[in-house]
Structure formats: structure tokens, C-alpha cells
Length: 194
Length: 57
Image (cartoon, rainbow over all chains, first blue to last red; front, side, top):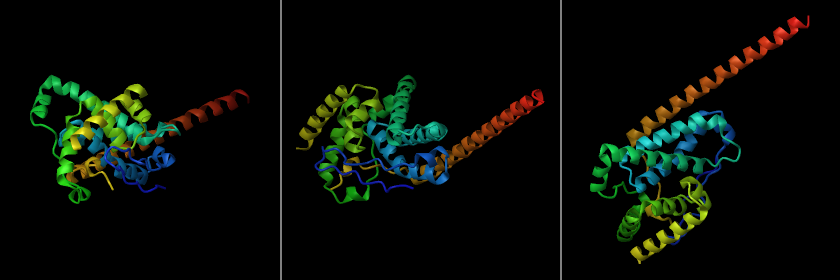
């Protein structure tokens, strides 16, 4: 039913992932078969969480938004079209939820606390433990320091393997704007880690 | 070589359990709503067919 999710390979750092979207059985997902929903969750929950955390969400906020994104997916699943890319759909919803959260966070003041606490910390994965901690720290820091518009494009294309055009759709910007932001982000990251 | 910096970030274990439960519950609720809608649709169609048959004798 499902192809195994391939690993996001980026060699070197600034290359785009070669694949990320595993084949989703849309028919099973439309019928909301438990196995289908679980399989999508297994693949995309950690990815959405990483995307949101690197956009600046706290651990708790990222979890809340991941939950909301999947609840919306389940509610919408019976109406998904044949050409729907579940990954792009989920990133679009997650990004919109994040933007909405930030607007309200500004109002209630919690955003100020998030800003004051700096870039979000996150647990190390096994792969990370085998890689240069210094390089990793510089990259993570450089990504966190990117302006959010550039960071979102960078994370979607480099981190999640979307094509620049798909990232543009997720973010609601033109493909040209996405390419420009991506190029600028790559320049900044390259400079930071070189 | 994987780029470790942009690897997915697993949910905390407790949060994953909680979110999975919420999503499964929502899936069950949605499936039930779809089944009810289909049932009502079936009744409506049956009633129309019955009425037509009655009119046409």
C-alpha cells in the first residue's frame, strides 16, 4: 500500500532533497482506513513538526499545530482529489496555521516570550550524533537567523524536498519570488557555514 | 550523506500518543458522518422511487 519514505538526502547541504514524498494511497486515505491514516501520520508528523519548529514554533505550539493539521486532513480526506499531493497539502495547512497562530500570539504577547527565548531547541536525532556538531550548530543557527520568508522556502525545498514551484504554492507566493528567496537563503547559509 | 540539520523532528512520545488518539477519534467520527449521510441519501432515493412508482401505478 505504501512505499517506504526515502531519506532526505542533501549533498552538500544546499542541494535539494532528491525525494521525499512517499506514494500515498489516496483511495485508502479517502475511506479513512485506520492503516492509511496511521501511515501518513508516521511519515509526515515528524516532518511537519520539524518544519514548524524551524519556523520558530515552540515544542508545545508545534505539537498543537501538527495535531490540528492532521485533524483537518482527516476531515478533508474523503474529498481529496486524485492529483492531491498530501505532503504539499499538509505543509500548506501547517504554514497557514502557523501564520494564524503568530498573528494571535502577537496580540496576546506570548510571541514576545518566544522571541526573547531565541531559536527553538530540539532533541538530537541519531544521525545528528554522528555528524560534526560544530557544522550542525552553525547551519542550525544560520537557518534560524534567516528572515522567515526565506526560511520557509528553504525548509520546504532543502529540508522537505518540495520543488520551488510547490513551495511557492504552499506559501502563496509566485514561483519567481520563491526562487529568489531560496537563492538568497542559500547564499546566506553558504556564507555562514563556509 | 544525510543532512542532519534538516531531519524530521519526532514528536515527544506522550504528545505523539495523544495526537494519534485525537486523529483516530476524528477519523472515526468522520467515517460515521459519511455513513449516516449515505444512509439518508439512500432513504431519500428510495422514497423518490417509491413515490414515482405509486404515481405511475
